Figure: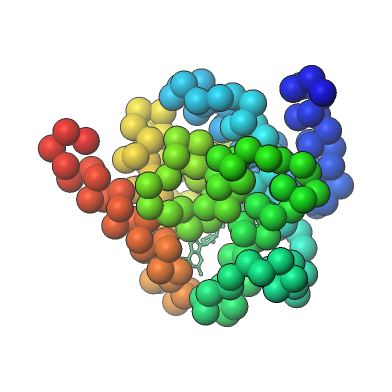
Amino acid sequence: MKKTNYLRKIRKAVQKAQDAKRFEHTLGVEYTAAALAMRYGSDIDSARAAGLLHDCAKCLSDEKRLSICRKNHIPVTEVERKNPFLLHAKAGAYLAREKYGIKDPDILNAIRSHTTGRKNMSLLEKIIFVADYIEPGRKHAPNLTDIRKLAFLDINRALVEILKDTLRYLEASGGDIDPMTEETWRCYSALLKQPDA
Ligand code: DGI
Ligand code: FE
Ligand code: FE
């Protein structure tokens, strides 16, 4: 199938699985990821596919997300059991492969890591993580103007700023911090401190 047709097919299928507001966010992440891929020399169609699918499990119930994980032997951590919305990333990667036919492991990893990040992310994983945070429909995060600019100047620095603000928000709101979010923050703030970073 031609690449453009395949993206159109995914877009239509995701539209059916999401409410209108979430789908608008999905389209925002698709084109923001495409723009970042242009900037950093990553594959544009992979960025679009990952952007389209990153929240494909977002409009399911927590029960459904938990049952997808249980049935498919996807490990669920303690924090995820308490906050099953976090599982939309892992369940989304599963659905991307099984329901939407994605085989590229880099796209699947980008979906899986899009909420907490992880250490040593690929360029595509970073692009999706950042695009999710800065897409034009986002309004409420602090420092968005600066982070949007930074995303196109230095993606690793943008990553650290996003993680810092996310951890700060979770601390202020009393949300459970997933150890993975902290590990990602540690990994990339240490990287920035290296003299040649
Ligand atoms: O699905 P989206 O809303 O588009 O974006 P997302 O998948 O990045 O999810 C955003 C939410 O995830 C945001 O409210 C912060 C939250 N989050 C990120 N890391 C953690 C977390 N929530 C908890 N409880 N723990 C984390 O470590
Ligand atoms: Fe998400
Ligand atoms: Fe999202």
